[in-house]
Length: 225
Image (cartoon, rainbow, N blue to C red):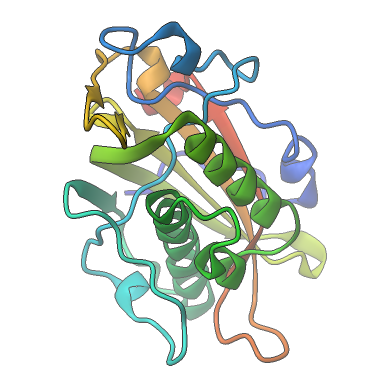
């Protein structure tokens, strides 16, 4: 399910360190003010990517790779078409595993979880760690359904790797208080939709997987609604 093409240049990541975050779930109902994201001004995390897999190349895990399983009450949907190009398919698989790894870290409440470190480098690893730290500080884990769709995969110029971009619908994805078990429900609105852009780099050294080098998350994405 490809959407309109995105520029395949390193310039696509000029704003990668400026992350626009949105709330846990899609709207304002049922969640206290201190965990409603506000486009980069809140301490709450973006409704962070989740992990329960659709059948695709991303489900294959290299021998010795860390666990990236997710809570049983978290349903992750990747509504993607696998690219015919092997390099693009591997990069897309790596992007999905990065998302799974991030959610695994939130579930484990471990900012140093080996899963995201295995599937990311540089700014993408820093982003994952900061998200896990914020969820842990808030005492939240993840629950519900998290959907990713409308992927676009393209080769970056100058040997910069592969750009993987996709939409996200988190209208039915919620934070849950770990101590009380209370689910922080919210209503669908524009904040339910995000655009992700990840720069993926190929295996190097002892690594066998494509890894996320940088990630940009843009909230209130009208093009994804």
